[in-house]
Length: 316
Image 1 (tube, one colour):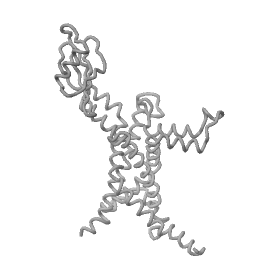
Image 2 (cartoon, one colour):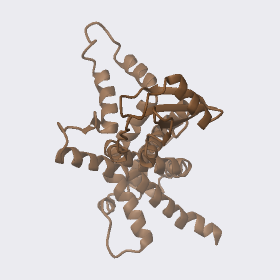
Image 3 (cartoon, rainbow, N blue to C red):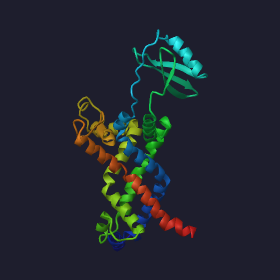
Image 4 (tube, rainbow, N blue to C red):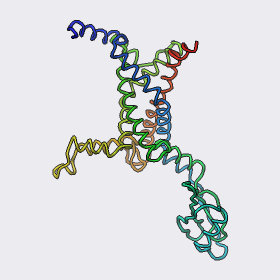
């Protein structure tokens, strides 16, 4: 059994030289290999998440100028327009998504082998007027899908949720690994000047990890909730069973609401706690985008440190 003196020695080591404590070494290995395993995932989700904070602004900028048609003769019936569209795109099933008022094109969807192609057609001449969405609009939609479900639908969302849970492991183990001892912890709160680039990388990794640990943990937990809402709801019901008395006032429901709210940082496109577009809205969105890049910075600096300390030596 561990004696009192041994426990005190271990505690003193943790306070002064934590790198020599076996538990810290074990946690470091978990942190290292978890980071290597999901590092690229963390980088992609972090970068795309910061970009899609401005999804509304990007969508507004991506809108095509409206097409105004001059009626020329009678309008084609839906059947005639479908026949024209089938000749233009043979092999596709044709669906007229919406009609058109006078002077507006018709939106037609073409489906084949699970893929969908959207086009605008002139309802008077049958002319193909092109894609209703600009390349920027499609790119923003692609980014959203990459961030939400890794371009994989429900399967991708499940993988995304597992990745979020692993990020929680990274944050918790990183919090343990961060502790440098009582004599050095203040130095880990900032980036020092006039040091080599290797030490600069370590300082940056340590500083960013310390100052963003709370918000990164919030992003990870809320991201897992958005991927596994049923599981989180089941846990909430277990912790605080629903009754007639607490049907509208359960703390567990409020926590889940705020998890979703805080992850995106806005409702109906307006950032919290703002009441409309303006300085508050833009400042809050900038903060979400800025701190959302922290995991990407941690990945890059972590990879550089791993290269310096491990890979480069082995290659030599």
